[in-house]
Image 1 (cartoon, rainbow, N blue to C red):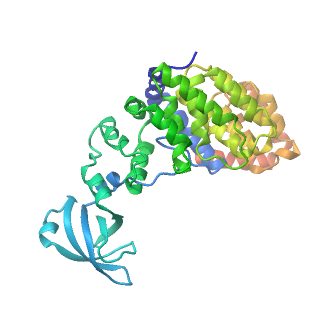
Image 2 (tube, one colour; image 1 turned 90 degrees about the vertical axis):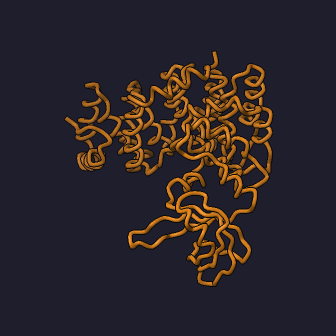
Length: 396
């Protein structure tokens, strides 16, 4: 039985308490052991820079101006056309000079975001615009409005012909909480989203989001068509890195639940020859579903993840996931990896020690004591690092 989106929203809201605390603990453990940054907002969007609206909200003043003259050193003489936020007196000033962090030519329209520096001077960040992107920002709702209301505006600009507006609209969705994206998802024509997902001209870094968006479909007709497309993309042979593939897998899990997991498990988790990039995408999709999905039993997700213990390149991240998810069933297997030559990498051994430290059962304490007797220095170093970061409790 496929999950309903209200049930997924329920999980997302539940994460504001216990799950958020678990996520924060995991973030510390992952960053200390693997130096991986966990995603905020959309879990399948690339590293996100601030949106134009966010820059406007955090700036002392935002101006739409035209470059009249520009020097080689970066200073420019500007004519103010509109004050988008902040000090309205600058409009009366009409013209002023400012150093810009953007190489521009005379006649270029720019949006200037001004912030007050500690020395009392104003610092400017410039973004080149045209009439379309300038109007897009001028009309964009402020960050003080409800998130869902704001996203309705930005949804109209996804894959807009204007590249700046299209990318900024994507960033707005990337920063948005998942339950808010789900609330807005009925506004999308799923046929259009399917086109975006397969169109070669759509930048690859946006396709993870579109894969997720297909997984949020509410109408049965759309669910069927979306699942067919996502499955086709999953089973298609591919030699190169697949941008956005984690979102495709995540969307498929939302639509197909257990059958979707079984497909991903057989192709990427239990297959020791599966491409490294594909397996990493599968891990991201499983973490997402474990956090927000409900139709697949969480223990079943743990079982699928355990396959990765057989591959040293994925062992550390898999062990961390299993610890986050309180899966202590493979404890003996994980403890036994410590002495295996193929698993001697420090990151793996720290993950093993962290797993045993986090385990609340006596079996975990005994396994840790056994490792101390085998490698007292190595275990002590791992414990010291993990306890210093606060990732796991001090060993008793």
